[in-house]
Length: 431
Ligand SMILES: *Cc1c(COP(=O)(O)O)cnc(C)c1O
Image (cartoon, rainbow, N blue to C red; front, side, top):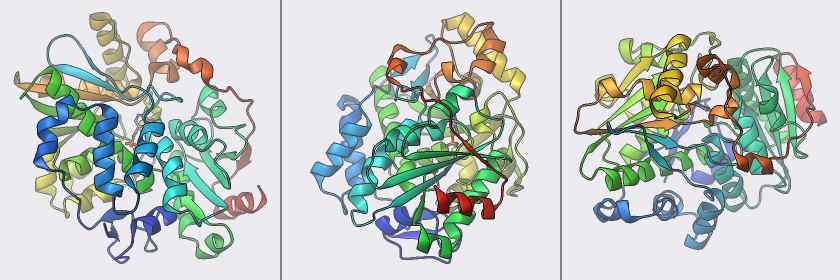
């Protein structure tokens, strides 16, 4: 595969180069010139294949030019060593795809674990790497866990002041090769700092940086896997029904992976991009205009993004054809009140507890499906991670799952900086 930048200037880039840099020189995101397709035979047998078998075929298609089958198999088996169940909500054809059974309980474990294992294989000569990350809560823990103990690699996590729970911060601060940096600003400020740092040539000559966010294809590509897996499980449950996929949206990493899966041949009819009150993407679908704005704080914190990075990828994927994108994707937005009501109603009806992000995806489904369709709501985070929303909805919080006892609850050590490049540069040079 050959890659270009969504800004159009940088072209002819290889996969290792795209992953080493994270962001193109012209400031855009890397995209493949052409997506490889999967053979028809694969879709005929898919419902009999396991998650790992599907992952192996999908990853061979993406990484096979660069990595041996044995290496791909090892990366897949090591990074996907937990279940990804498709759970029915009642008998109306609505299912929840639970992506939160990894070590830090969000879908970001999948990309982070994969990236931590992929980097040393794709870039064996690169030593002393710094992975720079802006987190809205969940990716900090996922990356820290994924990269824990990876030699010659440090992770610097920028997080917005006052927006993360103590538990979320504890999941990354205190991991030896991870530095937690509290930024006096919003998530978008953190994300802007990461992009500025990646684009700073002088800084990168001194300290080779790569992105730990979904702007890096090393984290983005692995998400493609579970859309094929979800389709396979749906075919097993309801053969020959059409599938509608509802995806909670923040930075649009997860939704763009879903659309990449479709590009690779996954027969999914329609997608729903479910948003909280931060509706930059919904407005883009309506008007074709992009108006980045200050993110509003909602109960679905992990989706509080006012300037979603991966919108550029979605536009690139459709060659700027808004009509065609609208055919495939409907954008919806829900208030905190609707999120709370959904958690409450689904708990009352099915004894099933949703996190606030997953609730937006479920909310979008039933009234937008016909009886021959199967609806899959992508559940991105475990409800125990978002106590405020769950408490408001049902009057108590969700218990941590037993597998969390394996998590090392570290003490909280953070540095504090203002949202400026000068301050970030000092941190990168000194820690
Ligand atoms: C990060 C995150 C999201 C948003 O995903 P994007 O890929 O940024 O759109 C949604 N839900 C949870 C639980 C998350 O951690």
